[in-house]
Amino acid sequence: MNRNIKKAIYIGLLSILLILLALLFISIKNKDDRSYPINSLRLDSNDVYINVQNLWSNDKFMFDDIANNAKDRGISISIINLYQEVIYSNSKYFDIDNVPILQEALYMDASYLENNLNVYKLSQPLYKEEMVTGFVIFEKEYIYESSVNYLTIILGIIILTIVCFIILLYGISLFKSDNYEFIEIEKGLLNITKGLLTPISTNKDSQYPQIYITYNMLIEELKHVMQQREYTQGQRKSFLTTISHELKTPIATISAYVEGLKSGVADDDEKRQQYINIIYQKMKMLNKLIEDFFLYTQEDENKFKYNFSECYADVFIGDIFSSISSQKNSRTAYKNLLPKCIINVDQFRIEQVILNLYNNAKKHTNKDQDILLLAYREEDNIVIEVSDNGEGISPKDLPYIFEYYYQGSKSKSKDYQGVGLGLAIAKSIIDAHNGRMKVKSTEGSGTSMYVYIPVV
Image (cartoon, rainbow, N blue to C red):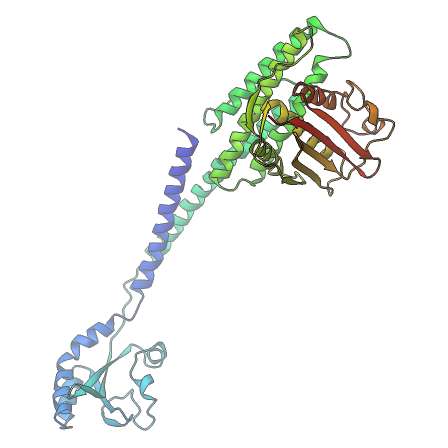
C-alpha cells in the first residue's frame, strides 16, 4: 500500500479516536450536570404560578392556601415586588430579614446550590396590565442520583488512551521513514564524491521512486564512463577528477535540499514537493553532466555541446538567484536589476557557471560572511556579478586563475582542494557565448567575479 494512503488512514483513525475520547468526556459532563432538575421544577410549579399570577393581577394577596398546596408537593414560594420587599414567603431557605439584592435573589447560581444542597430555585415574573411588577420564587429539593457508571467510563478512557498511544507510536515510525529515505540519498551522494559508486535499494513503499531510479541510473552511467576512461586516458587531465569537480555543484545543491527535508525546513506539502522537484531536476543535471563529459573525452576538439535558445534575461537570471538564495545556509543577498531584454544562451551552461562562481565564493568566505549576487545591464551586455568579502586572491595568482589545472597558494592550504578546472571550464562556456569574464580581487578583502553576456 502506498505510504501516502497509509498516512491518510493513520490520520483518520487517530482523529476518530480523539473525537471518541472528547465525546466520552462530554458525555460525563452532561450526565454529571445537575442543572436538569430546573425543568422538573418548572413543570411542578406551573399551576401554582398561574394561581399566584391571578391573585397578584387582582391585588388579592391571600397566598396561604396556594402556599399550603404547594408545600404539600415540597415546593416553597416567596413573592417579591420591584422594591425588593418580601410580600410573602414560606421558604426555609429564603431569609426575609436579610433580603439580598433583587438580581441575586432571582437567579439560580452555583453558590446557592452549594449552600442549599440539592435545593433548586426558579424565578417567574408577575404581571399587572402586561407590565412586570413583581416576582415569585419557587424552591424545591431534588435528591440527585448520578447516572454515571464511573468504572465503565474509567475503563473506556484507559482503553482509548492505550489505543491512541499505540497508533501514535506507529505514526512516529510511519512519518520518520521519510527522513530515513533522505538520509540514504544523502549518504549515496556523499559516496559519489568519494568515488564509491554504490546503488541504493529502492524501498517498495517509497514516496520518491523517481529519485531512486535516477540516482541508480547515474551510478550506472558513472561506472560506464569510468570504465571507458581507463582505456583512453591516464594523464593529468583525468576524467575522474574533472567529474569529481563538476559534480560538486549539483551535488551540493541536492545535499542542501535533502538536508532541508531532513531538518523539517519544508514544513508543508507544497514546499516539500518543491524541494523534491528541485532534487529531481538536479539529478537530471548530473546525468547530463556525465553524458557531456563522456563526449568531451571522445572529441578531438575537447569542446562541449551547446543548446542555445532565446530567453528573457531578467526572468532566467532571477530564477537562478532565487534558487540559490532559498538553499539552507546560502548566506546570499541578491539584486536583479535587469530590464526586460533577450539573450541567446544555453541555459543549463549559464546556470552551471553561476553556481560554480557562487560555490567558489562560499568556499573562500567564513560562515558569518555574506555573498552578493548582482545582475544588471551595461551597454550591449548583461552583467552577472558574484562578490564576497572573503580571503581574496593573491596578486601573483590573478593572471592564471582561468587556466586549466592552475591552483593558487590559498587553495593548496585548504581542505577543499580542487584540481584547477572550475574557472577554466566556466570561462570556456562564456567564451562559447561570445561573452567574457573578469575578476577584481584584493587579498584579505574579497573577490568580485564578472560575467558579460551579449544581449540579442
